[in-house]
Image (cartoon, rainbow, N blue to C red; front, side, top):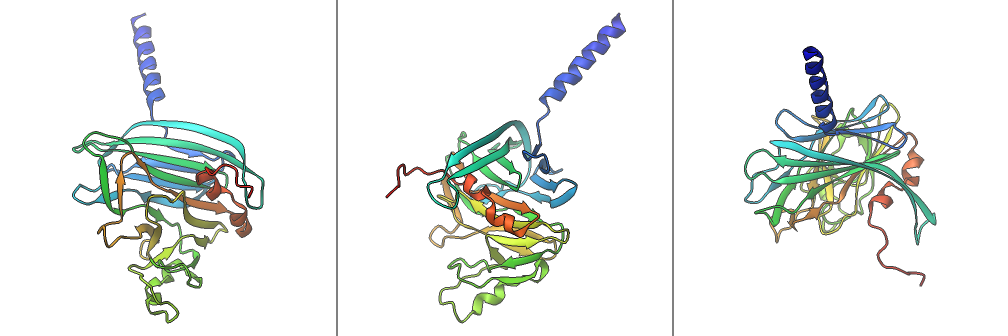
Length: 301
């Protein structure tokens, strides 16, 4: 009887711990695309993406650097996670379709630094059948009401030397012609002396978004952003040696940084569309669904 009671208590304890384990993976509605979140050995937030058995994005780090505050690059623990699923249709007042299907699963991850200043950071991942988006949230918290961001270190680690259609990461214009090359041959800095451009500032070997790629196993990827408001636009800095891209926000000479935000604050969505046909990137409503819906009311005029 004593042994049975001990076994029962152990089983109950194990079940209780299992129930409290945070969810760190979210699947698309059709269960084919998965985004996995994890903290590395240094406590840095990272994510990885797979479609069925194919790895689309290898383990990629997330974080921030600030003026006069320590960087957010590690030392986090997971406080909790929340899941939800949305499957709705909404009316679009313009465009090719009068109704848009919005079907996704979302995972919210609540993080906190384990050491002073013990800052809070939330991450939201929304996974659709044709891609995913994620954003950072700086929730309201004690002792911090404002942040000056000097760098957002969102990384995308590619799984190969993909074929890429790209424009240089120009902070002034989006009027460059598109180039086609392998990822390792991207050379945005060569466009600094383009004779057709009067105001051209290209500080890094970076590309403007959307940037489109084709993998060796036939996937088409498009990296972009959605709901860009009260925040600088994002270019993607290219590192051929590691086959990775890191966010390079458009800076402000007046501010001497990239962004000044008041808490609470949510960043734009960082988006990746993932399809097996190039045309499906055009037909995707992922970006539209992640943007804010119409707040103007009646616009029939």
